[in-house]
Length: 344
Ligand code: PEP
Ligand code: MN
Image 1 (cartoon, protein in one colour):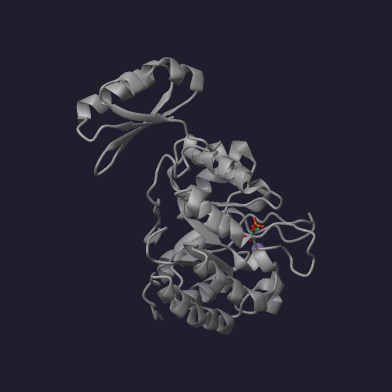
Image 2: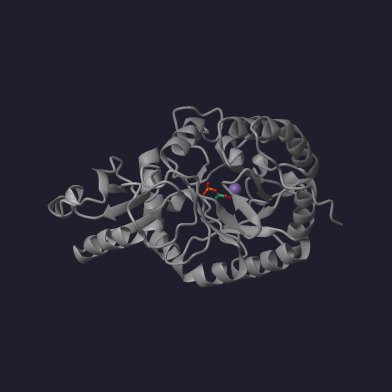
């Protein structure tokens, strides 16, 4: 339920209503605005109705939140949320570029990749230390050793970092070494994991499940926010459809739809979304055009040697070209790219 106060309502009026909601065992939300204060009340609708808040003199309007997801909905928060990943404001006028290898393979591999993605304009380094591989015989990642490498490389090159968390037992290590946590497609509905990251304040990139609907994705995001962590970014990374020409079908409808219904930032992953190196750049441009707040792209210093997802990895040259091609689209969308670092 959303309770809109009259323009002349005071802070004291707002506090009284918040108190009533709390006393009734519901979750109160205080959203002071420039012109009016909006109050949210989450919980059993019948209890809410029995409070008859609409009869209070300082209340202008009481209306239900129609969507199943509440905290992530624009019905509750109209303004865009900006999630701060280290120095990168995701969801702001700066279009975010996250790039790096699928998996952390060694310190020198990550360092070399980090240097060239930073030089080309990325501000967040991606790379998996815990890899959710389809086959148990494929490379599973370097584990905690990989996190340490990423932390060290991120500091040395001056990049924020993001890595996937698969197991609650690794949460402390990931939170200690890395700027942002990625929840992979295969874990989008792992509610234990969602609640656990929701109990931290770390930025979380929640990837859409392989066959998850947009509503399921937003409800998964709701789990994290309802557990206390508002720093959630949604990631469209392609879904399974009847189409087999590409690895997945990148659902850009979802980007525009989610931007309309939710205040959370949306990141597009054109690498997993297509699985095809030559399609990464066209779909990254499309991501800018449909209103995404950034992209996450897989790169490798030598794609054919990549231990995972080689077919979609961009070489240093490919990544540089992608960034050059992206720039006019970003400008046309009224956004900016981070200053190109031109570091060592
Ligand atoms: C990844 O980012 O390397 C990854 C495994 O992605 P997803 O969870 O989207 O498959
Ligand atoms: Mn990958």
